[in-house]
Amino acid sequence: MLMIGPNISFLQAQEVDELALEVLLEDGQSFAPGWIITVPRYSSNLSYPVIVGPSGDVVYNASHPYLGFNWDHHPSGELAWFDQLEGHWQRLDSALNATGIISFSGAQADYHDLEIREDGTVLLMGSQNVELTIADSIPDAGSAERIVLDCLLQEQDAEGNVIWSWRASDHIPPNWCSHCPWQFPLLDAYHHNSFQTQENGDILLNLRNMDMVVMIDHDSGELLWKLGGPLSDFEFASPQDFFHQQHDAQMLSEDRILLFDNSTNGVLQVARGAEYELNLEAGTVTLVDSWPHPDGNNASSQGSIQRLDDGGTLIGWGTAESDALNGGLVSEFGPEGALRGTLYFPSNHFAYRARKVPEGELPLHMGCANIQACNYDPISVVSDMCVLQGDDCNDGDACTDEDKIQEDCSCQGITSQEVEEADQCLDPAALNFNPCPSSSTDDGSCLYQVPFRVDLTSGSAIPSSVGLLLGGSSELPLEEGGFGTWHGDLILGNGLWTYSFQADGESEGVTRSLDLTWPVSWDGSEIRACFDQALTACPGCSDPDDLAFSPFATDLSLCGAMGPSGCTYTTAFNFDPLAFFEDGTCVFEVSIPCLGDLNGDNIVGVNDILELLTFFGTICD
Image (cartoon, rainbow, N blue to C red; front, side, top):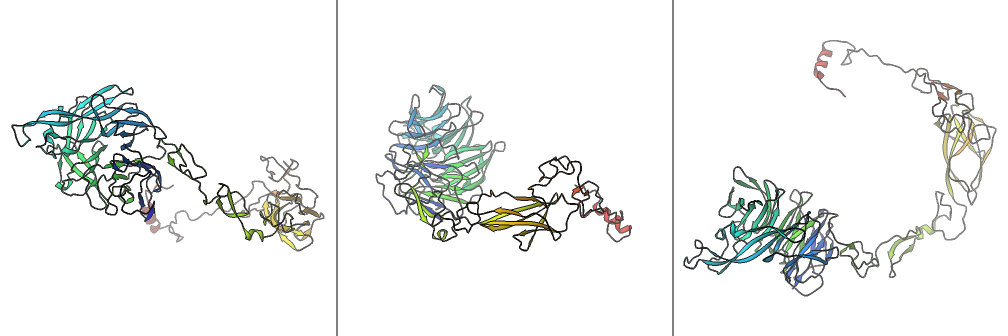
């Protein structure tokens, strides 16, 4: 495994600016693109918002007392978290500063969930103590009055005006509670912990203490269906499929629901992420996928789940501890269920929720947040691309290698001895240019790759061979280059070079020179010549619409004349070896086989018919 972060021992909570946590990526794995945000907490005044990048790097880790019990990214693109001291939500800017608050009107705001929508409206939870009569659930029918912590929902417009409200006790009897100590005077019968607005405006509501998820008709406030609990509208295939004291229910589609199953007091006793398929007509529910806790533990409270853009799944395990550190953890799984990696928190630190913010959507200022770095940015929140003393760098000097950031933040390296000992060629155009010479004097060792081309269209016929003679030395054969030219390359050193050409063994009557003495004035272009003439380009035709066109011509003197012309294709019947220019008269061999002989036996017979029937009806390209 790839381990990122400090070594972890069993830590006691302490007042520090950062939380010691460990991130483990499985072999060959990385997190999905985006940013994991979560807030491990030891207590309300010891909370640590954390951001982890796709490579497992912790890019933000700081103490924020009393803030962030629930930290989420909203459809509006904003980040918001709950302020436990003030009892309201804070909208956050790119520096994690509060830019506004969201409060529940007429009751206490509940920290479990918030929804800031794209149109500026918000959906939030509230709680309120109400006195109710619950005679059919309590042990002593003579004392039927109880205080119930009621579940309230409220929609507000962008200005904070209430535009819709809903009260659970008006639609759901508190005696549906599956986990209530009925003898107590105060009952948390609902314990609402998540909601989700559907495309048609209806609202999915999760009720932990009823083991139940309900769909609320937004227009009437009535329940469209109930999933889980003693009065479920759906029949589970097996008792092992039931969820207990669940969190963070979300509809993935009209018939798919995803939730975090705490499994407290359940059959399995193992926390898990769970995905179900609902058959609304048949009234059945099927567990289609699950992700059990890595160490087989259950979660007494908290927890979250999220389907990622790439089909993976992110799970925050709430209070389900890791065996290694006795703290909470967050796991990310791929689309096929393979574990990608895990965030481990120290002992007794747990996070209510974890969310993946998609790549490019994290609304925070990014830069280097390390004050020791050369590129420290005091307003950055997400630390990215810090440049530190000792980091590798490249100062652009080819004479140095192993460049490192120095104490003054400059980039310096060590001069390469291997380069110093090379030729002292100072010409950048040379093959053996030395960018790091030991002296400022060129030693005359430069080597150049020089291309030559000679034009023979002024001759009366195409020669069978053409060569280059350098200073009277042996011939360098040239290759045919088309349009009546031959070409080839030579590697030449510093000096004044003389050269000439010969065709079919006959030398031309012109001797040429190329000056490569230091400093070299040659610009690296092709050296061209006209055979037996003191010209760099022979007469030709630069008109591309003319049959005598040559890309090497600089005038129109041969346009229309064509010079020696004919068929220049060697595979043609009438190939003309003396032709310079193609005149379009080529005639090629046409093979006319025995048309009906499909099997190649030189007989058209029954076997050919059978061959045809084998492929009859085939559509050919």
